[in-house]
Image 1: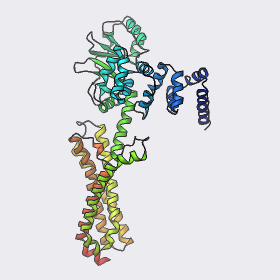
Image 2: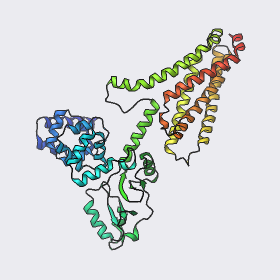
Image 3: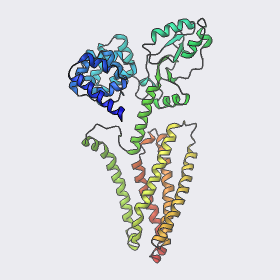
Image 4: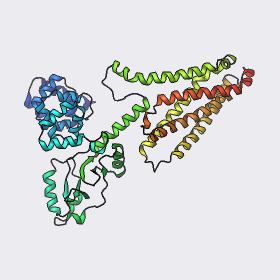
Length: 456
């Protein structure tokens, strides 16, 4: 608790220094903070206070801070456009290329072009090249600040080069070896460089089996490779194995976070990252799904009305409709989550789709059987009507099994036709389970109707 209070007091003190325009003391205390803390303080300010910061901090200091702020932070583009164009250009030139490109890609095309035209020619060309890569590919998230050396040089010369480039490089733990035509031919760790003899040739010690990714590789596949190989960075190459850039683990963490949020949004049927929008905007985004599900729900209601005669003969059947549909819906959502997760973490060669479906069917049979026996006993003793309990138990078994099958089969089919399996959302599966559960329940009830009526 003490640390939290101290942190709050420091923020209040810093804000007072900013508002009182005590620039020297503000800079001394602010720049002593971690870059993440600087970014969070900056994001908490109003427009007038932010403008004071622009006057107090150099473009390089702002760039270092913005490098650690998530590039997709809502409102960050508004912050950028409120600065003077020359200040923005200087900031972007001092940021790591991949982070600067992320910001440019979120701006209006004309605004981004204005900034690019004011940059140094080599910087502008580099950023324009990265902007042309398709979103969510390796090319769109790679950085071009890396250290490369050639094979026919000594460790001593390589270390000298490394010292010169280390300040600008995003990561120096891996040093990539390229040919004279910039083709990737090897890799050396910083540790190996430091402990090796200064006169040893690079080609004698480099690792020739380099794991790399294509520039058009999907970012999710890149994330899997970095996870599987425990890399801090991975090189990005074109079709001719020319080294184009690197993707670092901090960028992959952002990718994993984005993919997780995307999958969860699909499962929930709503954008879970839209935190700053108004209630009206949130309602507009949620309504299409809700209206679609409403019409699906009406089909369930129509199906129930089809069995009005059955319900009129044994009104007790209506009591357990929500119990069966709700349990089956929950089972279907569980199966959906498992299937989407397995599809996300497995390669096609590793994942046996038939095995996955059969596993979920068997799981549905086991859980359905246990649940069915429990509800059979509960209803039998509660209502003193074991035929009714048997109907509900059998219906529960069948409904859960079908829901599990749908929960695993639908995302697989969606992936096969090229759609994100996560968009087979939980609400959709639940509504579909309602429809099938009602159909199963009343058909089974119709078969046992004489016994149910005789026991009432």
